[in-house]
Amino acid sequence: MGCLGNLLWFIFGGFIMGMSWFIAGIVWCITIVGIPIGLQCFKFASLSFFPFGKEVVYGGGAGSVLLNILWIIFSGLPLAIEAVVIGVIFSITIVGIPFGLQCFKIAKLALMPFGSSVV
Image (cartoon, rainbow, N blue to C red; front, side, top):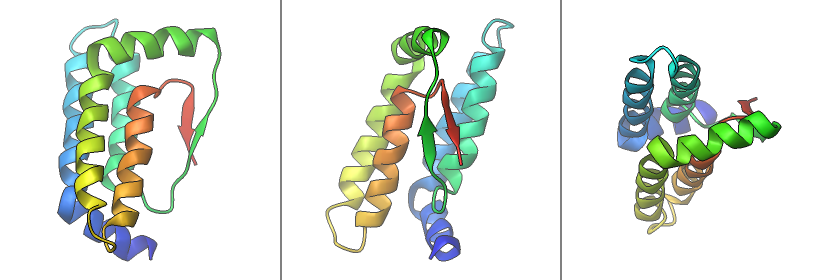
């Protein structure tokens, strides 16, 4: 299911979500201070392109909380809203529910990307 799910995901919505993360990474990398945030965006863009078979593990400390707050203010909210809207559209049909669940996984990640890792 992972390979077929990833292929269908990429065609029907993963490309759009992955490109959103990639563009956010480019915008953050324009400044020297934002390069660590941009690199995190690129890492999660690869997850957005092919999410099936991957899990997100959350953790971190005080630094992660501070970066997550800055992230939500500047970039996280639009990416989370995009993922939730696409997830709701996918979840309308029974066949689309697994794709909707992946969107909601990415939406949660869009709100708390720092201190998390993809396994």
